[in-house]
Every structure is written in C-alpha cells, then in structure tokens.
Image (cartoon, rainbow, N blue to C red):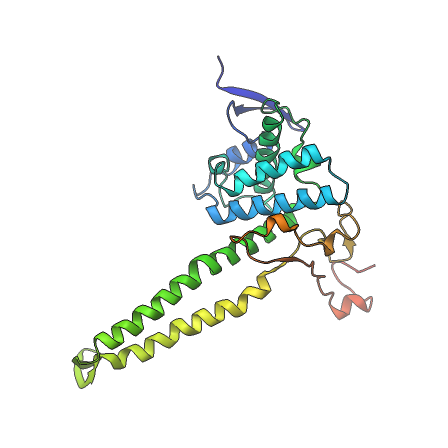
Length: 287
C-alpha cells in the first residue's frame, strides 16, 4: 500500500503524503524552498485561519458562497485557529514572492479538511475547492500582510503588554525591597560615590513604561487590514475578484472572539508621486 497520493496541477503530477491535508502547490513549495527549517508560528497560523473564516462568512453573507460549503470552511478554519492542524503547515518562512505558497497552504488545508467534514476523501478538490472557495475574493498580497498584522496585534496584546506590566511591577517591588541597601556606585571599572540601590530603579522602570506606551500607540496602525480591496501595479487597478462593497464590511461578529483583536478592513490606496500624476516620465505611468 502506497504512503502517498497523486495530485495534479498545471505543471503535472506530484506525490503528496497520503494523510496530508495540503496539496500540490504546498508540496512544490516544500521541495523548492528547504532553506532554514523555520516554520510559521502559532500566532500567524491562528491569524490565517481567522482571516479565512471571516472571508467565508462574509462571502456567505453576500450570497457568493453556498452555505453548506461555507459552514464546512468555517469549521475547518476554527480547527486551524485551535491549533489542531498546525502540523499541516510545514513551509519555510523563507519562500518566494508575497507568501503565495503559505496562502495556498492554508487554502489547501482548509479545503481538504472541509471536504473531509462533508464526507469526501483528501485530494479530491470537491465540492470545496482551495482557490474557488477557500480563497474566494482574496489574494496572497492582501491575506499575508493582514495575517502579519493580526498576529502582531495578538502578540502585542497577549504577550508583550502583559510581560511589560509584569516587569514594571517587579521593578517597583524590588525598588521598595532594596531601598535600605547602600551600594558602591561604579564609574567604568572604578568605585564611585555610594548610593541607595533603590535609586537605580527609577532610571529603569520608565523605560518599560515608555515601551508599553509605544506599543499601545502603534497598535491602531496595525488594525487596518488590506483585505477585500487590494491594488495591483502602481495603485490604479482594483482586483476584480473583490465584490463591490465588501471592502467596507467588517468580519462578522462570530469572528470577534475575546482572543482576537478588534480589526477593520480598510484598504489603503498607494499614493502616486506628483510626477506621475502630472503625466511626467515614470516607470509605471498612471493612466
């Protein structure tokens, strides 16, 4: 009995591990980019699943995605977010282009798991297709940057800020504990004027407070996602697979869990230099 299945894409046939939820495009990336052995982390995979879930729910809301297929995709996305399918994301973080291989890795895993939920074998690409359904209205150029934004927000909110708060509290506690201790000051390698140990803490504690405040101020800039309204080329041509009005929709309420940052889908238009607007010479003339 073989331990692989045969999958096909426009380049031909490819052997994929029999029990793998990924497909041909992920397998090609595995073979083409064995660079560092560093894989995507839990936060990023969670963010990718969250984005795919929000896209499926929005596409169902717009009447573009069959509810039976959409619900199976949502269930598969939830499993991605819960970490049940982390082993199915084997790609190296160093890869080609705009993260297309990882976007397709997500699409293939979600589509195969959704098909399995609906009672179909792995690798069948039906009734749920990785491109037509899991990736509906999306592009690697908007999904991957958005996943990075969401993952960064999660890490700031759930990892960095709590750690900084703990550091501030620890420094304040130690300052009080060491207050009666007098120590020798140091100037390079020589003893200097004596000082209270507690006097060192006020110089350190504000640094963590400043870092915490800077992280909070940076967070709003990460909340604007490039979903459902990316631009191609110099910023003049909207991608056609994004339905009119979908760029103004927020992820449905079911994706707003306590673990997820509050985000908006607000694509930004790339500013065109004045020389191009004036019709002067430029590499990509704006028409």
